[in-house]
Image (cartoon, rainbow, N blue to C red):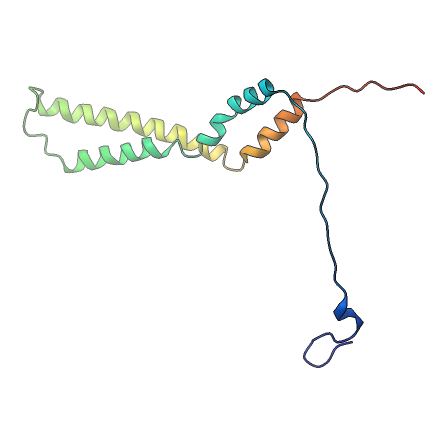
Length: 133
C-alpha cells in the first residue's frame, strides 16, 4: 500500500530482492597457445592509435612547407632540394597516416579482450568422447 507521496508503507516496503549473475565459463588452454594468440592479436591493440604519429608528422611537414622560406642553402644543399625533401616526407607521412587511419577505422568496434577470448576458445576446443552406458 502507498500513501500520496509514493512511499510504500505496507509489507512491500520490507521486502528486498537479490539478483545474482554467477554464471561462469572456464577456458582450459596451454601457456604457449595463450602466448601465440596474444602475439597474433597484439596489432589489434596498437592499431587504434598507430595513425597519430604519422598524422602529427604530416601536420608538421605542412607547417614547415607553409612557413619556411627555403632561401638559404643549408649544409650545402640547394633551397629547392630542401623544399622537395620536405614535400617527399609530407607525401610519405600522408600515405602512412591514411593507411593506418583506415586500419584503425576498420578495427574501431573490435574489443581486444573479446577477440582474444573467442580465438582462445576456438584453439582450445576439446573433442569429448561419448561414454557408452
